[in-house]
Amino acid sequence: MSCWGNYYRCLILFVAFLCLTSICSNYIIINFSFICMQEDLTDFVVVNGTKTSIYTYDGDHKKYIMWAVGAGTVLGTVPTNWLVVKFGAKWTFLVAGLISAASTALIPLAAKYDYYLLLFLRFVQGFAYSTDFAAIGIITVRWAPLNEVALFLAILTCFTGAASIITNSVTGFICESSFGWKYAYYLHAFVGLILFALWAAFYMDDPQDSKRVSERELTGIHKNKSAAHLDKKSDIPYTKLFTSPVVLIIWLNAFFEMSAVIFFTTYLPIYFHQVLGFSIQQTGVIVAIILGVNIPLRLASATFSDRITFLTEKTKIIIFNSISVGLSGLLLACTAFIPSQFNVEICWYFVGIMMCISVNCGGFYKCAALHARQHAHIVIAAIQFTKCLALFTGPTLVAFYVKVESNQSQWIPVYLCLGLSMFAANLISVFVFTDEPAKWTEKYTEVPLEEAKC
Image (tube, rainbow, N blue to C red; front, top):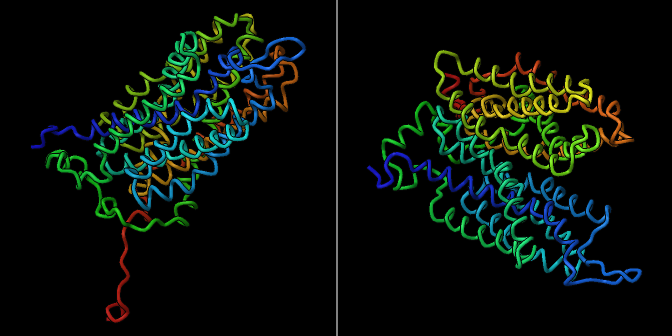
């Protein structure tokens, strides 16, 4: 019996979640601090006789600041995933966390002295952030028992919502205090260092290598996993993986669902204020509730997905994916036609959409884990890349269709495109998704020519 009982994996899960949240918080802190920075007159220039903060950025400057972190994420997805596969998550994720913390601490200095250095640091933050999904995949593959896969994925993929809630509230408090916005960055960097020190102390790339894992817990983690699944050095069949119909449909579902989620986080404040007529204060509260309501349900649905035994795994995957991608897509398409005077009803529609989306850990995520088995971290890491691509979907649709933001009719084709695409992706998945491990997850050995002839 280990001194940690039979639950050391829970400690690993908790520390990993905190580290994922830290890197994401470093990634998004500037979104809120823009408001505080432009009010900081400790460093200013005089424009037309008026003091203007040097931290005031116009639309183009903000655009490049946001694009820099996106570019870092896109370009970092492949190399960071390769590093995790080659060297494991312990050291790769640790280095990413330290780099993220260091670049975050330097941002106030860069903002003061060099705009291009600021862009570079934002790129570095994005590059470090790209490690998150590779880490999620490898942690799930190595540490999650097969009957806890959905729960692991649910907790580990909650980091975006948790980071938004923590970062916005903490940054807002520090901005209004005597310390000022710069200390929000210093605090985030310091907390990141502490959390990744815990990561270095507790995490091991394989539970077999840790004396803190009891024999009983290790048996539970390995239950029903094949020898190939447990082999840390097995070759990755990239060609078969990237041409697998199941994997491709997983990515298709992930892409359209994430396109909708990113669209919500980007444009719901504009839609609620300009179209539905809510005040700025009301908009902030309502959007926060809509985007945060899914976290408790996410954890509950993961537990149901893992614990329900009267349905097959395939049936559960199809049901959960149909809710998270199919039903939410239909609700989104229908929302477009609700007149703006029914703004309260529209709010409830969006709450319903986010609640449906929250069960995706039992849908395409779980399909990825069960079908790709020991290679699931590759599939899940690639979902990060689809998330990067999804950053451009909403802005492209809005730029093409919406010329006047207060005109509700111009938003209808945007909602229809996103909603119907989600529904179509789910419809395909009903005929493709499976819980069976792929043939390429099996470990084959070549038979010598002499034995083959005999």
